[in-house]
Image 1 (tube, rainbow, N blue to C red):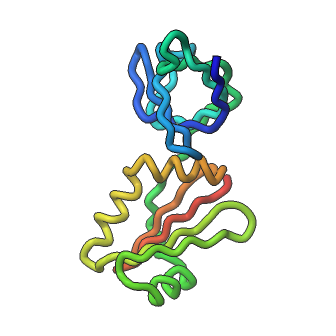
Image 2: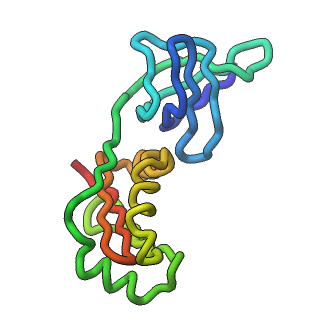
Length: 157
């Protein structure tokens, strides 16, 4: 049987099955049945999946090393001076990724002034924001916004 180890985002879940997406490769794995306790959509799972015969298109959870959620919070705080300076040097639609001192990463997006709130909401609701946080190994994501500037901070605890 083929085993797949990794970090997975639970993309969808119901009482009987779940769909997990590998955060490193984006490969999708459908579980034939839920483990006990069942996985929930939005959870991040570190573990091993085993392809089930005869088709190997359906997987079973072999082991779970870790289960957690990565909260995405929309902060009342404005982007920092550093983040505003980065945005000032790029065109609308551009993204700058920058390692944080210590752990995590900072993403600065320049957006149209009148689309800032919508862009912030979209980032907060996008499952890929959580998947990226899982890939980076962080514990939480903080989104800050001001006219034309959106910062997404992938942070440790």
